[in-house]
Structures are given as C-alpha cells and as structure tokens.
Image 1 (cartoon, rainbow, N blue to C red):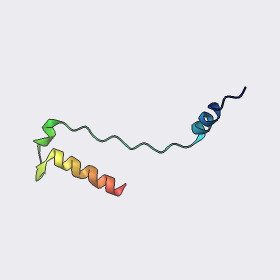
Image 2: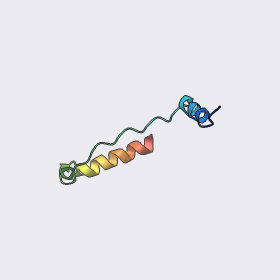
Image 3: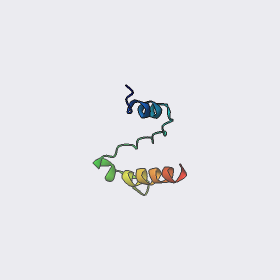
Image 4: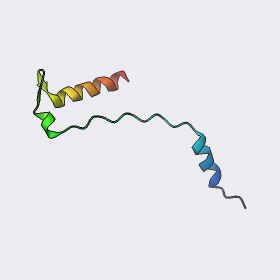
Length: 56
C-alpha cells in the first residue's frame, strides 16, 4: 500500500531553501538615550540597518 503523503515530503527535502536573513542587533532602552555623534545610538543603529536593507 502506497501512502500519498510520503512522496511530497521527499520532494521538499531535496529543494534548495532560501538563505535566511541575518539577525539584527538587539536594541536596549539605554540605546535610546546614549549620545552617538549628532543623535542617539538607537537612531544610528536604525539608520545603519535601513541602509544595509536598501543595499542588500
């Protein structure tokens, strides 16, 4: 007796999976008030991540 659910499972295991996105750096409450250049560390990290998302 052939089980129909085993065939699709075997096919999905052989397909290439998309590369996972790297995790973003954790943000802490202290980052929102830590001075960094002309703003805060939180804004600097956010701007950096947005720039990386646009480039990548």
